Image (cartoon, rainbow, N blue to C red; front, side, top):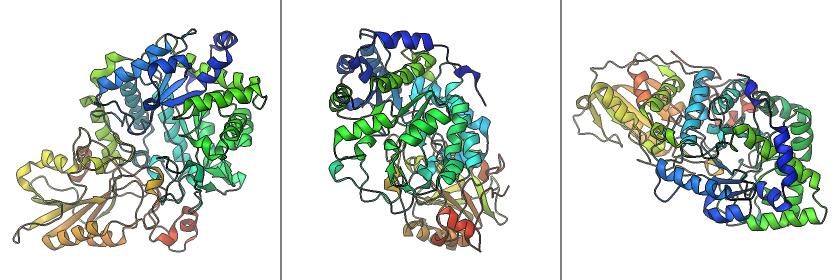
Length: 590
């Protein structure tokens, strides 16, 4: 996987450009603004280094063409500045270019982990890069190389696995898939470090940030919490994927909202500067997470000085960029942040922009627009769905014969938004027809013909309607980040009721689970004859039908253990429990 293409040959150009820059131009490069908070002309006036679309940061009319125009307007403004330093536009394309209506949405990382297929993950990343470049976006805030140890965490699905070695294999494949192709797309390896190891109940609230829509709210219990591991555990479990990503050519790392031993990661000079930049030799740049430096201290000046001196090179402000710029300027003028630190930060940012080729080709690739959501791209997503589905139970029912009459039910059977999950068109995702794609029900109908399929979401059919086989698709409603923190991990009562209703009507019952993590499934498992963990498969529900009817075999293997009870959560509790997992890491029937 290792790429020789990250050989950095532009040091002389970086140095020459830095010598010409004013303090305002330098601090502008260190500033990243959310696109709704700045006009293109102000991006030029303040020499802004980066603009981003957060979850749902879409143009008014959300099409690939309008995305391309929106991004181009900022890049054109940057080209009018004195030094014509290109702006780099970033987006959370964490499972495909998932903010864009019509783009292909791949399975989330939790599913890709179950494929164990590094070549597939590399192809997924490359297609994502091509769809990003079609809209002028050069920077993807992915991959997450978190190693989730507590499945109650709302970001579990962003992690490939609970197992560090598997995260390393697939995380580096993803970095190479973005970066080792023409055009190069910058990976953002995240969230440094230990976000997957925070403790339940340790999320802090910040009175001075109250009301910000992404400050940790009432539902947050573990996201943005405190990792209390000793340093040896932190390094072995959580730091190792970053070492591998740097060796694979990573030039950007995003710092985590979380804390380590009580200190915010954005204030951790030891880990950011001594370990990451010193010991691991990272010569790219560090970006903050969304408004995260504001959590360091109630006094904004203190927060800015602490974060920049800790090693942050660019700050995702994301709203009030004028306050950030004036605060950092004052800190330099007062000697609280050295010019040496500023120059180091700007060198790192310019180094990445030169390496990406942005000085020669700042605008992305309009010629790739026809590829966005293309049949070829959807075919790879369908392959990922097939390879990620894990067969947990099968008592003589799968594969289904294509002449079988089926009853189909459940909240997830005909629900594109539910199979995509969070980070899909909007930050939190949504139910229903959020974009273009194929639901699982549509996939079943396309496989065997609609005449053989009777569907009712609630499993309510005419009295005499019976069938040899029923399929029920149930699971979690979409969520993202701390709003998905969940202390119970059980299916909703209405999902269980549909399974019980269907059990009465059919001889054999297949249950398909849509979820961003393992859930507690003893009850639905007992009611089923076959049980499939389909994760959050994205827009290509046909891939689920492919394995149900035996067009392709089940090959998925669990990248996360399924516990028997909440007493076996988090993972260390499961590993110590005498009963062991209900389904251990690596399990999967074929």
